[in-house]
Image (cartoon, rainbow, N blue to C red; front, side, top):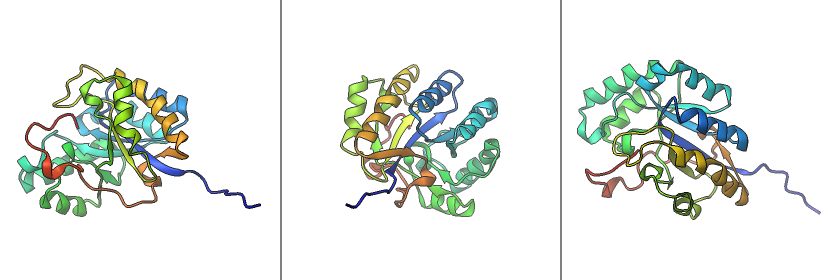
Length: 217
């Protein structure tokens, strides 16, 4: 009889727009309770204001990654502006990072050049909870359930960013445990981006169709 001793395939849980002093600790608590690891794409000025939360992310085994300094779509920025945002924002994270998710997942040729210059891997997502809407837990789970697969990247938020239509992240906190349970019911394990075995998408999967009213990422 053959026994499969391979570990469960990884899936990445990711959080944007933190750290937030109210919500990030609760998200971290929920992840700890579930025994799950994740990746946090942080906003530089918030990292500067709340360095203890960045330290806790790392101490708890999560990856810290770069989101932005100014939450502006790259199709509305000059190449010089994109470079300045990254160059001035990265030091706030305290240690070198490997991954960068741009605001709303917009990627331009200038974005790609800046990423290469700073040795950052651009990361999008494959499953969006749209938690920024403030919808019910069941609705958020339903949006991603059909996209749970090895190497998937799930998008959530531990902070309230531009375009969000909710006042806080309580729904995201409540989502963590049942989402982790759902992932494990598919034979997968939540992991950091660095643990994925698949190539990473580099932008918003709806990039070509996303107009000026895109929200919440």
